[in-house]
Image (cartoon, rainbow, N blue to C red; front, side):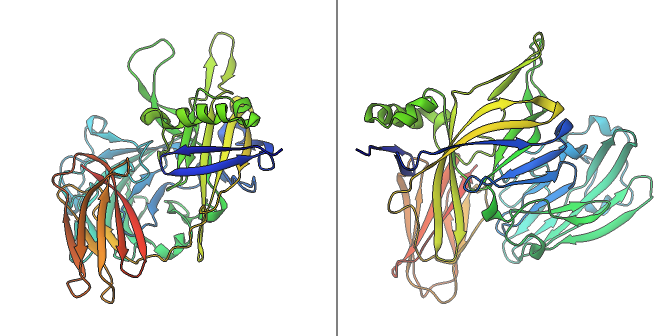
Length: 446
């Protein structure tokens, strides 16, 4: 008799059946010295490698966002210029630059790159200031980029964001400090169509290492993360090998239920898994960039042996965006082996979870723009001029409704939702008109 185990967690409902639980073992090869990042598709097992140092700068393709990142693994460090703004680009004085504030890409929030770390006011997005009238972000900051390239020495680059246009195009200026080159260029939104970011190399121009967003779910790569030295002490930023998730991909980490627990399909195990999925923030479903991360392995400097946490499981939600709706699947994954820098090989096991009815969304999307994100005092919602009466509902991370506002069809297309009374944290704004069209936007209250 076929046995089916149901698992429930915040925002997820899915089923496992004997016919669906087919394990696949796969090897991801990053190459000697981890030369490549590898984009991985959970459904097909497709592996798309891209040179780790191919790109230098990346800018979001989400027009209501303004994320700007640097590729630390290409050798870059980011220092914020403390003595001026855009008007000082030509005369930028780098004396004492080692004492300037140094920034890294955030390892948890997709939207928080190295250039996003100095937000001060509601409309200040760190590298630039947002204009709610023009919907443009105008740069007001200068940065020194320090590029360390073994065998070629160190290059110093002045960098100035100029503007993010309403359509998502990003304009910037850069120049080598020694005067050997300078440029003004635009990262066009069209160059990142069907991707999560647009990419740029200061020496070769526009590049695109990323496959289409429907062709990958997780990225095997390297990134800087706070790391405790082998002898103990204060954590320091150190490059580690780990796994990042695609923007919007949700992951759950389970540390007290083994692969065997899942393959038995008895309800007692389902109950155990249900408990594991919902206990505390550490194990709940999350869009955390490094929810999988790199702590599934550890290295013994004495024995020079890697230890793999084979018993840890991850549930990865894969969403395929299509015109007919979002086709959603869920996969188990665990780590089997890791070979280190000699070959950069990572062995994983994966298994598809059977979808239950309702996993494929057939809703009609309500067109809207919501900004800023993060929000301090208010969210601004822009709806089409031609629309129906719409309800705006804000819910917390547990799904509890906190606020409901009606947005009449015959009123202005811009609406201001007061968020001053919300405590800092993650929220979801749900929009639904009286014709059944819906949309939702996650935002951070600061």
